[in-house]
Image (cartoon, rainbow over all chains, first blue to last red; front, side, top):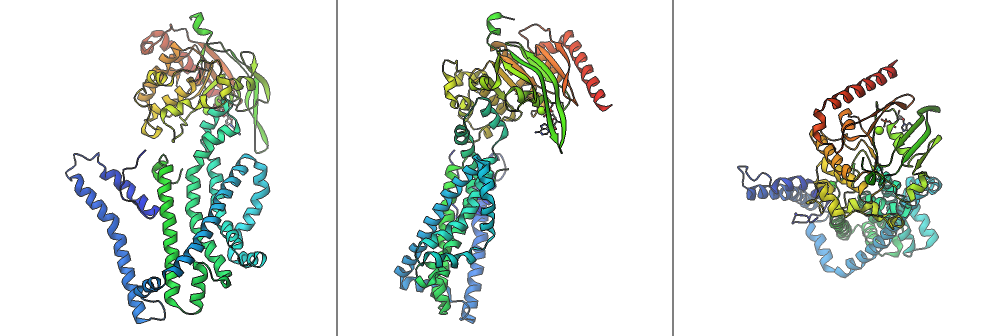
Length: 294
Length: 268
Ligand SMILES: Nc1ncnc2c1ncn2[C@@H]1O[C@H](COP(=O)(O)OP(=O)(O)O)[C@@H](O)[C@H]1O
Ligand SMILES: [Mg+2]
């Protein structure tokens, strides 16, 4: 079903706070004394003004601290200036990190979902693999990363592996829960007509698991970025990627470059989350108001 | 009953069905030596206190659960074979519709799986079927756009669409409010009277059971067993006017008394 909302939001939080008000604004209160136009205007005001106020306050506090204590944080203008001075250096590092996130995160998504499907269909696999999954999951990546760099060198491979390790668990755990959480009534209806396992998967479990899978994605994508950053910190000698850039700049007390790198991480994360939100809206239009399934 | 119509159903026979569940290592007998026969094209309601094993019996007939003892046959065939040719349609207690499928596609679901069993079968026209269920304007809608009663009608249409000779319904109207229920009962009665199939219908409502059924099976609890069976000899086709007939009152009194007896024995 087509969504009626026009503006797109950067984060799911915004999306969720907006939905109920959309329903208000969309009418059904046609006869109320307040004309729809002004209701909508008020709703836009409520949407944009509070975060704007927060950002303005944060920004001016930042500037105040940056000017009174320049060795703590650099002024925002200097950060922007640093990027404007040498955009290609930032761009190249961004591309390296982006590639790690895309490849490692992509592999984690595919592997995590496949593993969830296998564990759902073959309980014995879950019993065999879940303990290993738990062991790896509770071990801090920051501790595993140096070992992987020693084992696989400074190339891209250890970075992909670290990213996969961090990002795969939310996908796996959520998808498995989703594949299992199908309506038992529908399952019975299908079993009584001798639907095959594949048919039950394809018609019921796969689409039914998507809200859970997307909930997993929302956690996994920021995790993948953390994974890439951690791997680059650990293998900073290679000096490629935003993480390496931040790490090296910080060790040299180069505040502008440090913060420029951090802000690029921030943009990267927001872009991924925004893309995810749009994709979710396309695919999961049928899910209850975009909230997690009960 | 019209002979040509009754042949559309299949005979369901459950013999000596016994089922135990282990509760904390202790086996509890949920069904004890239950015999039930549903004639081809017969509408049988099962009524009884909660937890007496109605759903368990239905699930055993549906092949969703195995009996510990006894056997079930559909037209002389074992349940797994019957399932393979899609001999049974199930209406669960909740509509259990897929939110990402339109009303039409939800109804089509059973025809899209195990398609080998569709060969030579009279698949009903979905649009016609839904129109006769009063959902002709809602084919393209999605479940969440429908009321509870309409959703349950979609679930019933989903069981009828592949024209199985046996229909198993587990309290399909229990989640609905009383006014909606009345509507749904009469709708089902109408549809079934022109498409007679063998039906096992679980309900908590005595009037509902009498209105719809050829026989009402009363079950007792702990262990679950059949206490008595009442033939409902009201003329067909029936409509809501049966509620007013003196026989209806008699049946109602008789079954309610039976129910009271069964509940009282359970407390002793
Ligand atoms: N899987 C199960 N494990 C243990 N006990 C069960 C299970 N399913 C049903 N029971 C028990 O069997 C009895 C009959 O259940 P059910 O057939 O659902 O009753 P009804 O449908 O008549 O209300 C109940 O006491 C219930 O607690
Ligand atoms: Mg029940």
